[in-house]
Image (cartoon, rainbow, N blue to C red; front, side, top):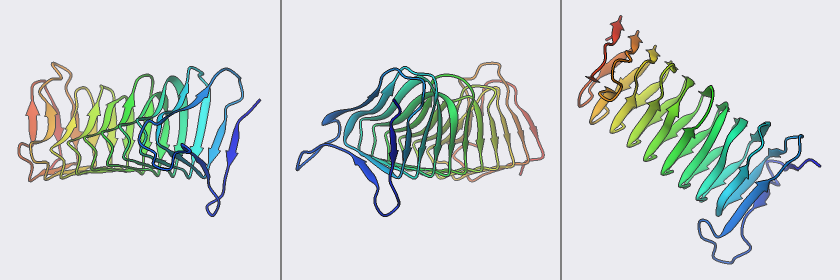
Length: 231
């Protein structure tokens, strides 16, 4: 069997508690157990779950045009590949802990933790990541055309990540990076440090064609960075 939850913009499908005064984590959530045909969620609301989606499957899960608000965890699925497009993640303890996939055109805001990657290559593109305690963490892959602002920690890279054409502005720490490529980006007005390389040991970054300015410290360096054509 396949779960297809296909709402519309005017009539979304809502997964929530039946309590008259629900609180975060009041019900368990959705457990996807077995099966080979991935479910589809489009124009859905996910509210007040403990773990909104929990699965050990390794298929590609598609979620589009949905609102994920006030859950303890949205998704814990470390083997899962995800394709998430045009969604809003807000007021969650942790937005998602997943293996691999693509997150695009999303707003990730006011969560304790945004995306924590636990597996293979991940792509985050055309997203606004703002006002979280931690925006993105342990990312291996690509962060493209994103605005990352007003977070405690904006972006944590876990080596071999490309950060391209991003605006990383007004966080406490802009990004942790070691062994990564940072290019064509603005890293500005981060109160503690723009790029923190202090815990990355000998994994140097390649940084070029970036504007690194008005930060508490520009680059806090431990390893050896290759820095070219920056302002």
